[in-house]
Image 1 (cartoon, one colour):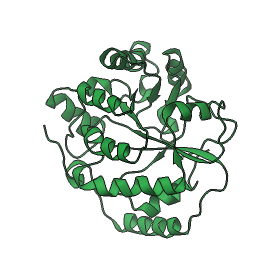
Image 2: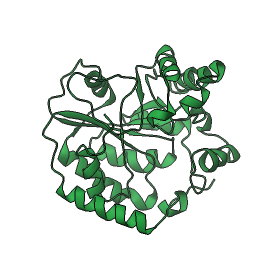
Image 3: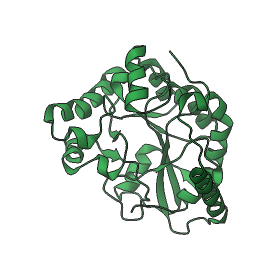
Image 4: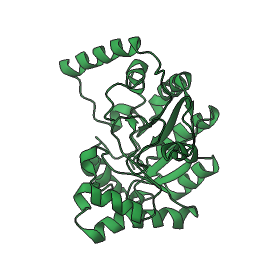
Length: 276
């Protein structure tokens, strides 16, 4: 298995004048951003923490802790559903794609700083053979190289550390692509939920839809997630939850990665570029 220990080995990196200018602009805007004075819950997520990103990831977590408090998934969903007041600045952290480096690198650091998190996993690739993982990483998820996936034992260890496991479908399927194929949709939603519950012995109440844009899900697939028994469904479009709650099956999340400058993270989680 290629483990992609280093960031540049595992993820496509592209430098251009346009990306340089964008980075410079975000850095400047981020340095000027001020803490959002309105009470909020912002869900944030990333995908990986490679060997050479641990210190960078810790900086990001500490930056977020200076801006607000982290809540666990149960508290997050109570806030989303309006059963618990959003009376301050709150963050909920999650990870997509099921990579082993989240358990080996991120989880110990999060435990050290007492930060709860939710790990979303595509269940058919957990502990899968190399060829299947390579196809997932390179063809489906568009990473540069295969990246080592979690095993079910890894996820059990994460649970023992206090983290929560959710579904990212079985095969990283785009909701909108399978919404017209009832049996496939059921397999991706109910099947992945059953996989987690069977292997880990806990209820699976949350799912994040792959690719995460609003256009990557539709009414049929979101309703199917409700019918499958998911309490919550997380996207990857930027937004915040305010007092009064929001649709628990259309929860916005802010994307970031460990290699991002802290000023970029600060810019987005201060409320910029939010879809709703």
